[in-house]
Image (cartoon, rainbow, N blue to C red; front, top):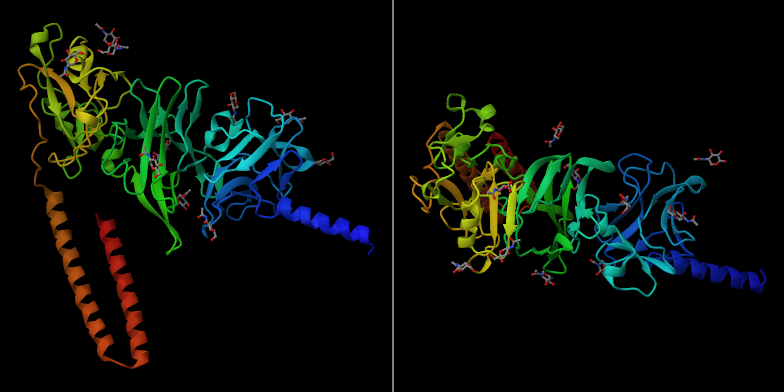
Length: 513
Ligand SMILES: *[C@@H]1O[C@H](CO)[C@@H](O)[C@H](O)[C@H]1NC(C)=O
Ligand SMILES: *[C@@H]1O[C@H](CO)[C@@H](O)[C@H](O)[C@H]1NC(C)=O
Ligand SMILES: *[C@@H]1O[C@H](CO)[C@@H](O)[C@H](O)[C@H]1NC(C)=O
Ligand SMILES: *[C@@H]1O[C@H](CO)[C@@H](O)[C@H](O)[C@H]1NC(C)=O
Ligand SMILES: *[C@@H]1O[C@H](CO)[C@@H](O)[C@H](O)[C@H]1NC(C)=O
Ligand SMILES: *[C@@H]1O[C@H](CO)[C@@H](O)[C@H](O)[C@H]1NC(C)=O
Ligand SMILES: *[C@@H]1O[C@H](CO)[C@@H](O)[C@H](O)[C@H]1NC(C)=O
Ligand SMILES: *[C@@H]1O[C@H](CO)[C@@H](O)[C@H](O)[C@H]1NC(C)=O
Ligand SMILES: *[C@@H]1O[C@H](CO)[C@@H](O)[C@H](O)[C@H]1NC(C)=O
Ligand SMILES: *[C@@H]1O[C@H](CO)[C@@H](O)[C@H](O)[C@H]1NC(C)=O
């Protein structure tokens, strides 16, 4: 081999190494990622990879982003969700007019980034956050990115990603589930923010609300117990102004890896944390959490209370609309007033304060963040279709005014006994003959068949737990006093079986309830 050929070969290899080795986090116009060559982008801190992948047993190829350091491949974003490439011909590149395009055979455009401006010297970079961005070479300001994958989420909400609206451009960022674990094309389930006057976070099934996370009250979403709230793992940021309306979260400890996903198979929104020791994701929050999270289960003025029978109760001053047929099929019919409201005479109208409730659906609502509660009351009193009012922000003793028009729906009990202070009180319009401004606690829990069964189940569970503990103790003593190795090994196996048995018993119990 002559020297020039050697120099050419080694410099090509050198170039190849630098352009295509896993250490690259960006490409420019002269470079590309190719499925057949197996080239990837890896973010600077090694957290995320952009590359080609298949799902299940299919040969369909997708361009996507997944965690680099996690042994269970977890895809967080897919470019060509509904448009797979059938072979390994996929190439991601910046074409000569600066657009980011994904090409398949015969240079067919399979997917392209929707940038509004043409770039002069564009760079595509995979950031440490997992955000794939298209920007001008020297432009570092996120506001000036030409395009970013965080603006077009798939099913995963990552830390630092905005969920909500850019009101200037009308861009909505929401999560859409994969159709199935093997098919990333958009499914029916989505998580997003609906732009009512008083915006809410909702899970939708197609165009219908499936589960309502509720409104942001300054420290949490009003939707459900243990719900979306700042906690030791992640905190929330809420931004609402004339330009933008979004929610964002950050993982408080940098070393923790968390994600939130909308999952069509589970019919759930779930929040996961990676447990490196066990090499698995654990879900630490999911919605819907219980029956009462089903949207509008109890109908107008119905209050869904877990543990009550029937689970739907009417708010104080209301009675079932169809009393003789108060069964599950009729719950949705809701409740009606025991005493009709007179609209004209304001002296005959008052408001009853209810505590620990999920704020009603805000499809028909009105908000003024500068008003205080007494102004809010007047605002509501002055309009006959106003049925309730509340503060919008719970911090510093409460501020802002929200009012509800028409029937109040999708109410549930979220807190009991005044222990929780995270919930806004809501004031409901009532005839003045009803006691005004008195706290109405939910009706006393009725003893019923289900409770008796619950108690029996509890007894069985305790008995099983004690039995297991005793057997475990005996085995432990046997292990300590016996020195024979085989016997000890058998004991360890016995303990493992015992633990599995306990786990199964627990599962059986959960299934029974
Ligand atoms: C990924 O793993 C590498 C090597 O173990 C480590 O240096 C890096 O900090 C990790 N990055 C993240 C984001 O966990
Ligand atoms: C680059 O890709 C964009 C998007 O597909 C397309 O509109 C444009 O015509 C392409 N430019 C060239 C030179 O092919
Ligand atoms: C690519 O182009 C060739 C020649 O025009 C054609 O025979 C072939 O079917 C094309 N392949 C695809 C996948 O479109
Ligand atoms: C691309 O942008 C246009 C105009 O803003 C929008 O109508 C279209 O839905 C966008 N396409 C995608 C795939 O986001
Ligand atoms: C979503 O809606 C479809 C059509 O109405 C229905 O068949 C399906 O069961 C719903 N899924 C869930 C999770 O409610
Ligand atoms: C959330 O936590 C991140 C990381 O610790 C921090 O930078 C940010 O300021 C916090 N945001 C809020 C609203 O507390
Ligand atoms: C959704 O749930 C299914 C069933 O448990 C699981 O196989 C799949 O991995 C989940 N998807 C995500 C993105 O977590
Ligand atoms: C909101 O309330 C404040 C204080 O009462 C008032 O000055 C302002 O005009 C109200 N804004 C609207 C849009 O009603
Ligand atoms: C509410 O605001 C009005 C008008 O600014 C003021 O007169 C009133 O004292 C305030 N009430 C309370 C309870 O702060
Ligand atoms: C009461 O509010 C409704 C709903 O916003 C509105 O249509 C109606 O005009 C209002 N009535 C009065 C008297 O302000």
